[in-house]
Image (tube, rainbow over all chains, first blue to last red):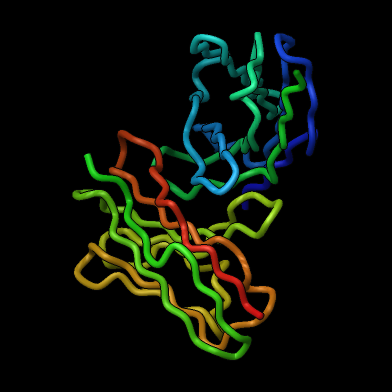
Length: 112
Length: 113
């Protein structure tokens, strides 16, 4: 089955700097890659997603890139702000309503 | 649109006791999932329903966990008997087939003492 590896497990960046979180997946049939943000004590919330027929997707300060050949994808947050502090999970699935396999998460700290 | 509803929000039980969680998905969502999220880890799928049928329960510890989705709407997840390592947040999610991704409920935080 699918296995998703995520790193780093913890990331601290200065406010205003960029943050990058990287993930790899094992199942070459996976074709949908969502990213979730989970604030302390709250539910995971979808922040951005990418399909396998697209190499990059951007939404304001957030962007995702996908390299299907290498089976890795990344989340990029630019101009980080205090409210970006949270745990971020990458995930992979074969299609949008199939089971989603999550990475172990990255705890992002934005330093003042 | 109303979200995925879960109850209770919190539950504390002693080991070997039983506990049940309830989930009401978004109206019209055929697919329902139960995930277990242990502190500091990513959510792990326990079971996936399509309407009232089980699609995947390969990760469900069937000796102590059971789940049902009668009538293809609400779902309950039960643990009997509970162990200390079952302490986690149990998340329910639902999705509308083919177009949209998951929406998670707020979860039930279970503490087994």
